[in-house]
Image (cartoon, rainbow, N blue to C red; front, side):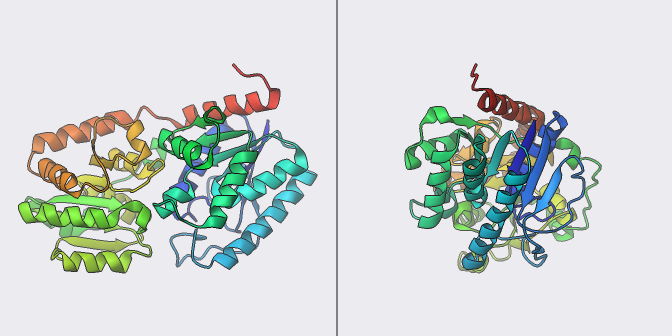
Length: 393
């Protein structure tokens, strides 16, 4: 089987979990014997991808000053021009190459996937890692992106949704039949996280606080409205009013950075909140390791790979009920993103009970190991076969 996979990013030029998921999913599919052509919008080196052929749709080079590549927002006209060039490259590929299935990831590549299907007649899989309803954390968002998502979902022969939460949004907001949608949860590639030794000097001050009995509450995410960080900051303030041995680590960057810094000052907890900026590599791994508790506070999170990564690094997990990863992890605390009082209670409960902290750490660590990208690949392969043959079990 030969697969045309359309994606917008791969590590190390990724701005978030989409690139990580695409990389490990494609690798597992390739290891199952599938020949993959993976199309990217930019031209850059990607180590450890010899198992597939990468096509650069343009000569643009990722901007290393950003969060690792080509951003999702910002200069929107430039983004649309880039998408047009991407579509042109995909058109050339389907005219000159033979494929069996087209697999397009998220709205950024949906138009190219639809065009490839039009030219080739091949089955199209649209993989939804997030919708515009998630990104805007509302029913508004960008109307053009909504239209692109609607058209892509309508034309797709099969839709992969990363969680039941995402599937429900697709059904309710876009009126897509539920039977057209397959839930394909993400996984964690444990081997990519091995051979690592935590360096306590990276966050030396936080380590000194831990020696004094402080509990470190961390989050690693983009600073956008979708991530519920203003609510997390409010909960941090309320928890700190009742228990003073707490420190909060905010790793990431985004348009809400200045607002969050100001909020910490307004709440009187600037001395308890530490902002790192965007992190990757050693700083990223060490941020997980220094944290005792990891909070995913998202208003709408289709899945949330960072929770699995945090579990690997031995943290207790507090996850908003609006996050899809909670469908596969049970030994965790959950709360509604808006319920800052409950979140504060949970943080204090963990911080004041070593037994509870230990129990939550062990539960999360035992659960995340159950999920494999090989299982994800097998689910994809079953769907590819059904679409190619028209035979459904």
